[in-house]
Image 1 (cartoon, rainbow, N blue to C red):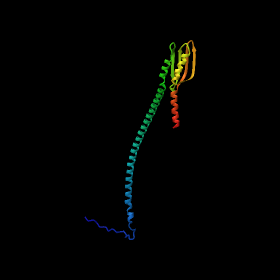
Image 2: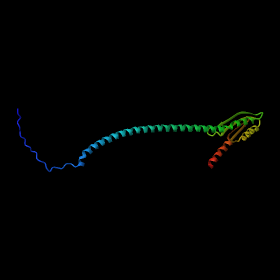
Image 3: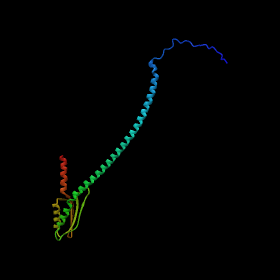
Image 4: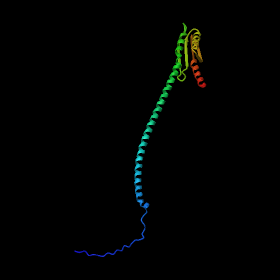
Length: 199
C-alpha cells in the first residue's frame, strides 16, 4: 500500500532584522533568581536554628535568674535570722552585764543585818528593756531605824544610787522601796557614748 504524498507549502518567512540576543548580564538574571531563592531558604533555616537556640538560651537564663533569686532570698532570710540571733545575744549580754552586781548586792544586804534584826521580805525586780535599773523593796524587823540606815549604806557602797525612795515604819517593821541604778553600768554607757562622739 502506498501512502499518498501531499505537498505542504512553507509559509514561514525569513526573519531578518529581528531583535538581537540578550546581553550577558541579563542572561545572569535567572541564575540570580535561583541563587536568591536558595539564599532565602538558607537564611530562613539559619533564622529558625538561631530562634530555637535563643529560646533555649532564654530558658537557661530564666532558670539561672530564678536560682539566683532563690539564693538571694535564702541569703536574706539567713541574714535576718543572723541579725535576730545577734540581737538576742546582745540583749543577753546586756542582761548579764546588769545582773553582775545582783549577787554582791544580796550578799551585802544579808551581811548588813545585825543580831536582833531580820529581813522579812526582799524583792529585786529588773525590767528587760532597762536591766541596769532594779526595783528594790525590803521589809526589815528591827527595834530601831538604824538597821535600815546600815543596809542602805551598804547598798550605796556598791555604787548603787536610789531614785524615788519610799519608806514606812510601823510596830518595829521598816519597809523601804526605791529604784536602784548601778552607777558602774551608767559610767560605762557614758564612756561609750563619749568615745563614739569623739570618733
